[in-house]
Amino acid sequence: MPDVVIADTSCLILLYKIDELDLLCQLYGKVIITQDVANEFIHRVPDWIEISQDVDKQLQALLELELDKGEASSISLALKIRNATLILDDLKARKVADKLELIYTGTFGMIVKSKLAGIIESVKPIIVKIKGTNFRISEKIIEETLREAGER
Image 1: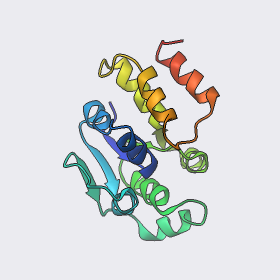
Image 2 (image 1 turned 60 degrees about the horizontal axis):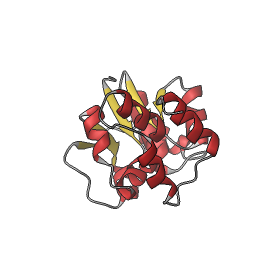
Image 3 (image 1 turned 30 degrees about the vertical axis):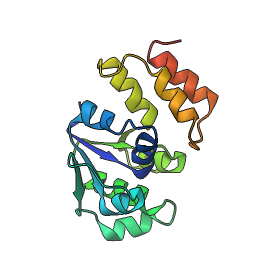
């Protein structure tokens, strides 16, 4: 398990929409977000999510030339914390994280890890719930998720 998990807004919103936000807590125990992510999330932030103010605002401003506030602040925070794993879904944000040699996963990767850790029995019901939202996900990612979870 990573030392620190930093979540971006898309993960929180998606899991909240399908009533599975607690998966993050069950898998990681504690998750850190930035104030910008908390503002974008708009819902009450659970107690097990820590809101960090330790963001390099100059670096964040540079990152915002390519990314939104939440992604930029999350990446900025990850650069300050050793051994942090980011949860990022946006492709552009992932490319920036790659360039900065940061460790990241996505919401679907976190769902697979939940299955492999025995927290959930199957990823299929969660994927069905996700398909019922406005979250854009390719069939290729769904197939890969099912395969990684041993359900395909």
